Length: 265
Image 1 (spheres, rainbow, N blue to C red):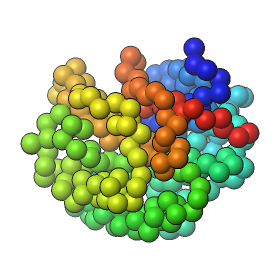
Image 2 (tube, one colour):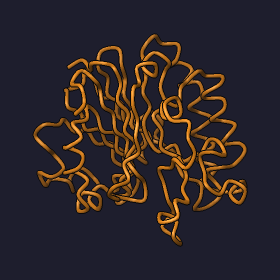
Image 3 (cartoon, rainbow, N blue to C red):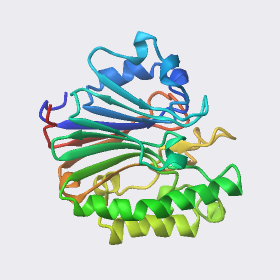
Image 4 (cartoon, helix red, strand yellow):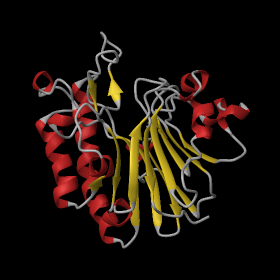
């Protein structure tokens, strides 16, 4: 039983919110009593989610869909009504893919982010690099704003060797390229953000995504590409973290962090 004044934040790439729902994701989600659940890859338009399953009465829900059906999309489930919700980054090419949604609670902003994957073809890697580069000034602006930010989601990058099982054979693959890892170095070492999970859990074999090919799940041949990245103030309040693996809702596992912080609302 968690202490009620703690703030519980969950991030989960559902790889299709309807598919995850059929596998029991919503039953599990509601049992967690989380304050905010950040979802990526909803792969649905809001008009397709009229079933009450997707709109639990105890939660306020906000979707930012991709224009293309069955693709990308992010969502926020919030136990408290946010002061403000921001849909997208104001970049039409990225916003049309539904990759960013932000809820503000007092001085804290909580974001669900879905960074593009570059694994399907070279053109998508170019899109990924472009978004990474464009986010740099935004991330610096956030850091300097005086607000606290918690950026949760699938960043599609394994930062260090400890974050990927087979690092040697993946050094030329999207998600573990030197340029991507250097960008994560910049995010942590220069921009001053905190990888909250690693602050609390330095151990090996901690992953959040497993390929559907082969026996990756059974052998724990995974990647840690889902993060809660935070400004130092809110990061310092993190008390406990876990990756939920008892039941599978998608090819990703939910990442849970409890913060010694009372969410306004």
